[in-house]
View (cartoon, rainbow, N blue to C red):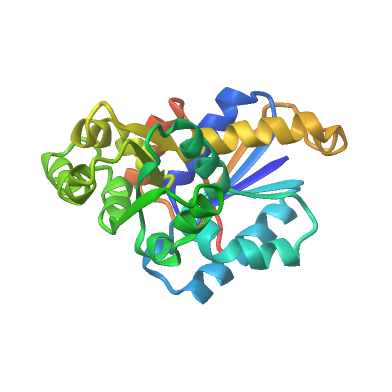
Length: 261
């Protein structure tokens, strides 16, 4: 079973990408909706949430863990990798690799939560591979709440996205990393506001390809994963709006179980 967690509905974009890329695997998802958004929390708080989430997924039978949250990936990965023996994947490294392949001029933009942007993790990983890269980051704290509220096609959302992206447009970036798994739900608006010539890097797609390669290269792990196509979805709080966005993301009727961990 593949275990996936996020602060809320955004991680369902990772679930969707994995279902499309490597269908048939059993998946258990936990959305920590009671504590969303993670991007406004301290690093230590996010690490604590991440450990609790991983423990829950392991109790459900997960043999592989996916941190489908850029904030948790940026601040908690080092600690959880030391603490757990199971394979753990984060969404940042695959997104950086795809961005480096996609960029023609090494002129990158990054949008994410305050915590992700403040961590500087994207800049660090890009510079490690391309020291001459130009990187411009913008924190977008309003986007996760807008997605969680279901304001995907509101005029106000488009105005806020335009405001956030304006500094990146003036820098003439050629590649934009969506540094939050909520942001693919706003991909149409983001592409329209940043311009069609800018390549968008969707971390949910990038991580699905990484997991596909890992399982192909590690048949011993692959054999431990159930392949009955079961999808179990857990959240720490359920709202009608969350159900609506989840149904739209996965394009099917789904049932959630609310748990406190």
